[in-house]
Amino acid sequence: MRHYQVRDVMTASLMTVTPAAALKNVADILVRGRIGVVPVLTPQGRVAGVVAEGDLLRKEQLQRDPEGRHSAHLPYRIRRDIATAETAGELMDRYPATVPADTSVPEAARLMDRHETRFLLVTSEDGKLLGVVTARDLLRVFLRPDAAIEAEISRDVLSRYLGTNPALVQVDVTNGVVRLTGELERKSMLPAALRAVHAVDGVIDVECHLDYAIDDIRLPNGG
Image (cartoon, rainbow, N blue to C red):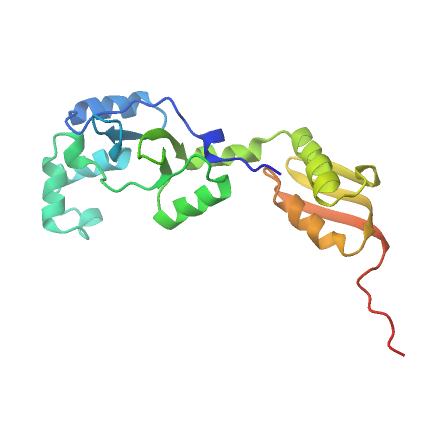
């Protein structure tokens, strides 16, 4: 089974800026774009940082209210630097969370949760920007057509992974919810089948009504 990877859902065509870019230009890109972040690149094309919508909003807030309660946890020097920033390099986050393009969508979601962010910069091994993936992008796996999910379960889970005859199992998918009916050859195949079906991209839940021909789990009587 091939899981969706970051490269499958990321936005690759991005508007970027250099550290010297004026914040007015950054704001213009953010208003016209639909991602909410602007990567900041060095002249060599490597990631230097990122400016997000929240960074500009925080700057505006601190200009009006330097002692604002929402930023009171920040040291005074940092609040001052944010309030007086004029370029992308002065306002950007210099250590944004990054991820390789071949990262699976579930792992990318875990990284977002760990870093408490709603976006990840997708970079190559040499640090060059490949794209941006957002939390919204990761939700695309739940938009997979039901027919595509059914086909993958029959082909990859039942036939290739379990080695069973897919004609023995009826797979019905409605809005991502899988209903399995029919029969497997052995009882020991049931847990593996459920784990594999749950792991298919786009599956919301699984209703299992499978029977089995042979109970290969029950221990023989010792007497």
